Figure 1 (spheres, rainbow, N blue to C red):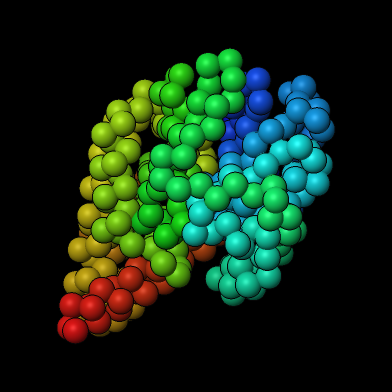
Figure 2 (figure 1 turned 45 degrees about the vertical axis):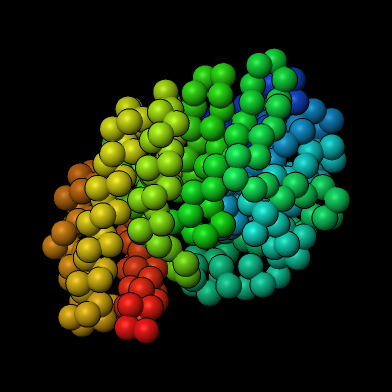
Length: 295
């Protein structure tokens, strides 16, 4: 695991390296972290001609922003991304603009995304596999919920699940809490994705924010129950009072401070404004869902 040092702060975003005969890095982090991540790869003994794969669980800039810079630094590497998101890696302007609108005052902390030639992009469908050699094999599993373009990655030799944001976030000593940001978070789809991952019975699991969980099965179960609570809160709150109603219901059913249970972790959530983003994502989802039910 490489700490990408998002915003110059440790413990926010993790990249993971699987060192087969043809090494892969999963979620290299934000563009502003690229130089640090490249240096860490070199310190691990992965030279400019060695890295073969840059795997993206999804195309939020804190996960994918460094991909273009890494593609330049490792010219033999190919970028693997969910097929419905591949075009944004070649032509990232719209993605960057939309992302900065969500990040607001923190946009400069993430940076942008340099384009990569289409010939080096591998669009991955569900169950796409990469053989890294030396017994290591990565399987891409489509797991929407955090975003429509989200994949999780299962390494078969060790049974390790690289979950991206599918399980939520745990900073430091804090507990897990879901991530449901704008614009296309869907807690019902997220629960279906967690059930899909649970069927694979991973031995280990690690999140992008931040690092391994103590018990993979317990984390999957907890993430499912938390998304269930958020879905119920979002629908009840939206009907009662729109976004303000959702904020009240989430606070009642899955309060951030009590759930996270650690002051330093809570401070990170509040500084990054990810909890506020959760409310925005749940509001958009509840509006879509209730409109669909009405029709």
